[in-house]
Image 1 (cartoon, helix red, strand yellow):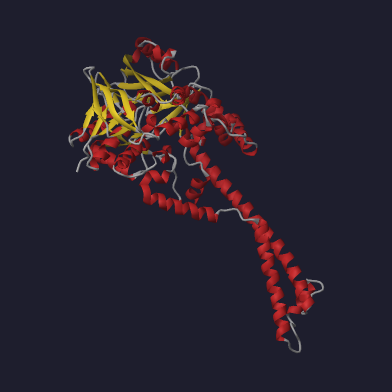
Image 2 (cartoon, rainbow, N blue to C red):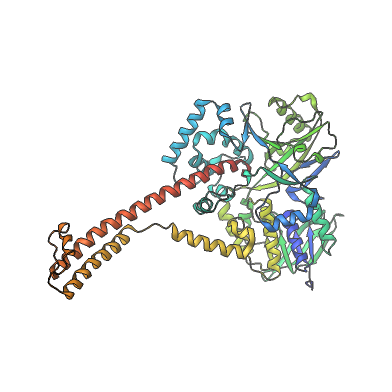
Length: 590
């Protein structure tokens, strides 16, 4: 049985389309409203003269079986397996990424490498406290020198602000595998969570947009709707429910339709401003304060094949503005229609309204061509054409006030019973593609009567992978680990050990006295050689109790102290090993 009213989904990106797909599985009718002419959001594929451009570069890799299965079902044989290759460009040299010791040593030189190691050791001995921002977060784990060499310039290109203004919470949310819990689990049971450690990944033959077009076709062929060029204008709400939606269609005509259930993946700051009547002033102010980072891609067509073997290069050189360079033919040969040519994407991170965002396309193409030549990667004469693709509101920014403002918005939205927000922008969280899809799937299940807390997704990996059964299993593992690795109270253990030793010797003496005989406690009397004044008498029993308690206390305290010390050193060692492994994951998460 289908619901009497359709489920309205605003936004046709991965989260919105996953929600619509799940609605169909639950016999509910979804209607997806997408303001652009393509589905996929930031994961779409743009086309220019038959050349295909991936907006941002999207590796399809997930540890969630349900998402992986869904991708496979949609793509079939068009889901390619691609060997991963990316490098860092810094001071005219290319560094393997993930970083490799030999390659880094040869490029940096012995002296600089030793200075980086010394800086790392210093950070371990004297970490910065409190750990409030991204700069401190990275420096505490990898040392100041490595941070300045490989992370500072690129991070500030991406986010357009000093690293000391980016909240440490962003790093903790984005860069997984650094918690003590995950470190212990990995050490005991094997495995790891750093996504960039993979050697290969899946990729649709004609770019990520091919995946979302398959979703769109599936939805439309199963009684759902995907309305492109349809922009939401207002949301009428009464008594804690959205009751009507007004939208503008492809012909620029306004329409209003009733709403029973709504799921939104559009930027939550925009969602707040669509509400009619308007939310309280405090909520509107919080929405105005949330900020986003945008980017643009200058797509260049090159009269040369090959170029470089990487899917992309991270450009850390501060003398150029470009942040990353994609080589689309290395993602899939089908992205480039002419095998004797190449197409690359010069990625520039910016903010809507800034100088870079407002620069004319022709000037951007000229600048990108000049920077490519300046880096020594290509001769400018080999560039034969270009195009510019802009992507607004790509990355939610974790600035100083985002957490407080987002909480204000969340508390207000919680009062609207039939509205759920999903995805990266819908939750103002820097989710990965699979995490965003999972929020959409859970939201659709909530419409059908489930009660999932969408805000726990991407906070608890176990919740992502298999929902409730795995969550229960993970909780059990966590409890067992907590008990196994809990700190032992030295005084309590020493007191228990001393009491037990004292009572054993006291009761043994009393029992021998009660038993009696010609030679009472002949063997036990030997203890008197160690416990001065002891004898198998009532007085001796109390002397034994005191001696044994004191000796047992010292033994128990020493044992507990050494156990805690070695446990602390063990946990520290595996956590540091896990952190160094996550160094390989850091660049992909920025």
